[in-house]
Length: 390
Ligand code: SF4
Image (cartoon, rainbow, N blue to C red; front, side, top):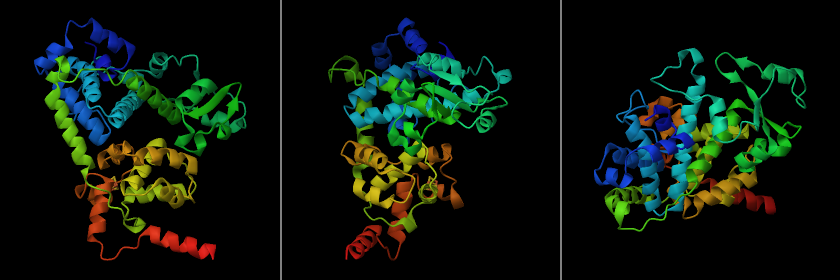
């Protein structure tokens, strides 16, 4: 089996490879093959850590699993997540598959052509665009001045960094609207974009954000499978599903700390708030991490909107994200772990406090428990609101 299919198991060629392979998933599951163990890990890591990368190491060089186990673990993981019977779990799983894929695509694109090798196969951006029928919809910005961008500035920004490709792309407006969401922040609204001849200008990183959304949609497609509990493959996977359900309930058992003490927030969250207060847009992972944290400590959507009133985050986007995160489905969306935030460059592990807690919420809870005196932002906010109305 092709290592590239194993790396990107949602690609059409990977699906064909699974269909062509002379293996039966029920037999693999009955035999508890390595693909089954890897599938369990895939789902567990998705739900707990927001990634599906194996803890054994990066595929293929360091992973404990071969290409066959890696590839076949994907359809088995989809069965497992279907059996969890939880819409948020499916959403989180799809988001984790997409986040992991985009990390891999980013690494592949950073790999200079001259360094590509057969043992570590890589995709090119054109391959990814073709996979999602975006070949006609996305074009790199040419070095000439871009329409509607002030000419010279665009020409400067359009340059290709050696080995990286162009810094900007133009994407057809229909594809842009399909793949992005205004809830990602003000800068994603069409009115705030350079738009010319039916195309929207995006940076390279923004194009990757849009592709991440495309991967997530692809992974979500067809989930959950209709499987009769207690029969066939569902019966074989019963104990794995029970373990995953237990993990989910443990993870969501502890109630929120329910005190808002910004002085005690961990540095990663303080940095994000400072950045937004300076008027700088947060990237989708940054905004998700912050919203998940604020909801995780027990703030309601209204409180988060008030708390972020003087920042670059817009009320509508905040409401959209926090309402989803705070309903009973969203309770299974804990804030990303310190490890995940470090991968996104959000955590700088000041004073090595990653040793203290595995995620920002746990770190905050610890600081709240240790604090002698706490002033809750809610009380201050209510007092200020009362004073303002007098
Ligand atoms: S170690 Fe964890 S809590 Fe601390 S800054 Fe990093 S992500 Fe935040």
